[in-house]
Image 1 (cartoon, rainbow, N blue to C red):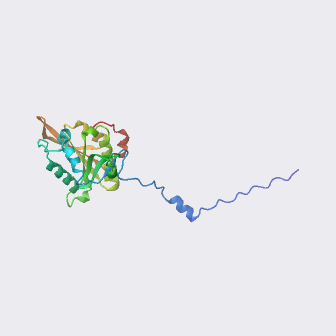
Image 2: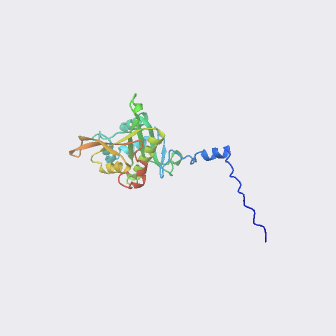
Image 3: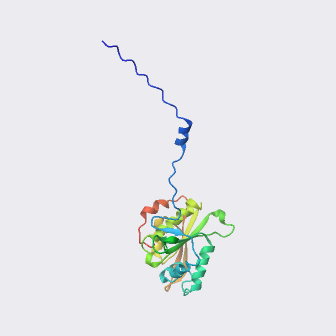
Length: 230
């Protein structure tokens, strides 16, 4: 009879080298993303010369003007558009022109469809890390989801890039579509200034809403319906 097989001796496992340990301990980093793009939109800096026509077009939209301007009984002028643009440039932490890719202006970021900005706090208040969103979309590009996409982009910019803690947004009581959109994006009602606004023959409330750092703003992205307002 053949002799019994020799017992199989397993080799002891190799200890990982220091190089292997370092490789395993390094975080897996995703490639850097363009901070000035979202799914369908580009965002670029304001050009005081060429973007004045955009601000004039925003002011020339009667519905949009009434929904975002306390002086909505005043007929907007070219000087008002220039003042509006200058205020956005001078008083914003970040201000961007919202663009669709393509068109003759593609070298500058695409077709300008609106503006969005985060207001700068008053001197001496920066440590509170608060801001407020201002946004306008040209009427022909509304109800396509561009407003909600731009707001989500600026929320990401505020919380993840700028390190802010609280982001506020305002709405006039008659602008129910905007209020529903802000609710779906995750903004919470904070203040209601009762009958603070006179519009179309009656008194309306002015509504303050806000979102805090760490609240589920990113989780709202898939639940926002296009066409509510933005």
